[in-house]
Image (cartoon, rainbow, N blue to C red):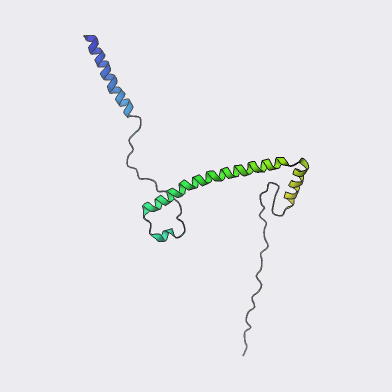
Length: 136
């Protein structure tokens, strides 16, 4: 009989302590104000009289799409780089050398195909003819 009491006591103790340990996994979230999203409204949208909630929704949509667009732009860049690499493999060594020479000879370009910003001479506007002052 004492074995049953001991077993029942251990079982009760196990149930009580397991409930406490399970309940401490995540602390309860308290009512913390959400950080407002930042962005810019499309042109003329400020004139529409949007509520703060609408503005926040617009910013959220913009943020979601910007992330997706950036990911696609990175994929496009990787594909263009891959394409250029494959195109370059088609050429012979002599053609590769000649292409580098041609690219470096182009004004505003360097060998790595990045445009060089050249200082443009400031263009002067032709002097406007002023009406002659009439002298009495």
